[in-house]
Amino acid sequence: MTTTAILSALAEEQQGLLERIQNPQLVRRAGRDFWRGTLHDQSVVLGLSRIGKVAAATTATTLIEAFAIDRILFTGVAGALDASVNVGDVVVATGFVQHDMDASPLFPRFEVPLYRRSIFACDRLLTDLLFDASRLTLTERRQRVAQAQVPAGPVTHKGLIASGDCFVSTAQSSSALKLAMRGAGLDPLAVEMEGAAVAQVCFDYGAPFAAVRTISDRSDEYAPADFQHFVTQVASHYALGIVDQFMRALAKK
Ligand code: ADE
Image (cartoon, rainbow, N blue to C red; front, top):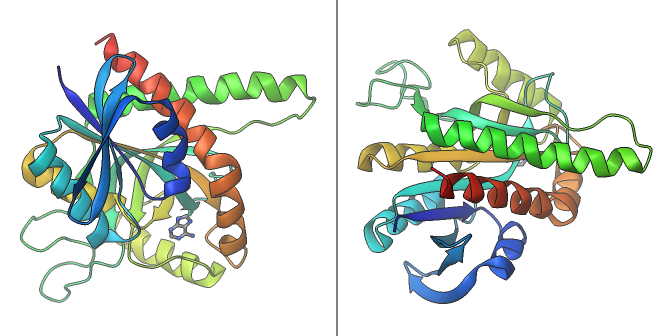
């Protein structure tokens, strides 16, 4: 049986999954708690990345080295960067870029030195499954919301996500980020703090990787308050629904 690692950044995001897995077994590695178990009769390991690229890289490396997992799925929240992306929407990553990588003039800005690339791509098949799982989850939610007479519903996007070791919390910094990245031909939909690190570790090991982020804020002055509210009230439910649909679809493959 193959094993899927499900990584979340925060405990609130992991809680629902932890309640749902069967035969949970706690394993401590690298100062972290990992939970082995099954979900829809498939072997899973749940992990918490914590926040930031180094913490996420340690967690991903541990999952690969100590748990012999076959793929990594990351769920979490992100700030919107693109104007088409709204709070409550979901972004499924096609790839990740480190927006704080800058070894210029030795290497072009955003390029990861000695890898000859700025973007680490996600696994195509897993990404497509995740996109469908996300759309299905949002459609089911929308049907429930529509019954409550609320008009517009959230949307699932697919595209590039930028990661860096800072919480983007001013309109000025998110505009500057967008402008700089656009200058390098990069157009990220959202920003967060872990995905690119996990993508690079998975690239090094040849491990398939996919990631989904629910948009908690607009990466502006309201971001800290929106983030806190969203993580506890909304994101954990989204993550649970999407992972559930994803694991069901994976079981049929
Ligand atoms: N994760 C969620 N919102 C974020 C933001 N505004 N900046 C960085 N990471 C985030």
